Image 1 (cartoon, rainbow, N blue to C red):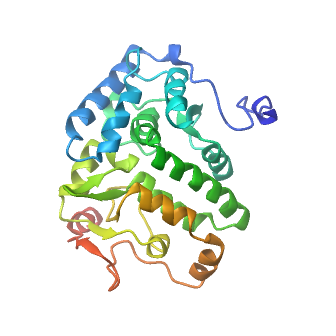
Image 2: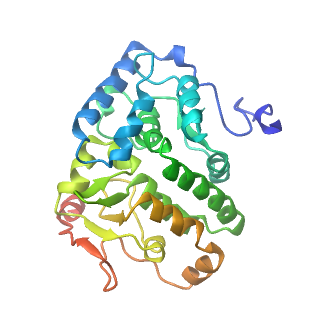
Length: 286
């Protein structure tokens, strides 16, 4: 494509992609990945949706440590037509949506320092690849991610990204899914975090509420700590179906005239799995 050969002033491609430069990773970088991978791989069975565990095989590649995006993309492309491309960090919304719509998942090519294992504000290669790629090997979730990207492009043109961003936050990043064995994790922000993988299911503080598209898109969220609210989908199939069969144009118009919902609120219409105490959030704010 033409945009792939054009460059921005800082030398990155017009679509913000850069070489991963796998050979530049240090032994410490690879050791950090291995530490993060090993502890999550031990913690998540029984907590995470089985589809995520199935997809982990995508990350067990021939080279040690951080996955080589070329090798990873080759396997992922065969499974669902997706690929992973490196970017220098967060990218503009329109660029992000365009990549998703074309089945390209953008990932930072850097990894956190060993003293940042439990928290990093900007997503790194572990969050992006370990957190997101396993479910991209699942055909239904892979279709949902593409549909979200296509919807994002339309939302950007209409100037209503904020509402749609909440859908991504409360599903792709911090979603729970209902199963016969109870609630399971699937959001990348949870499964890539050792502490939130425990908090999201076990702590009495957060609310856990049934997925409702309109309600979710009115609900604020926080980016600086554990979530106060988790939304629970019935299945990936239902999530994709609601995304594909909702006319978002009238929905945005409807939501425009409604007030945002505070993070910790419980509404009379909510399907409440867990009414949280909000103790953690109150203690952090004290």
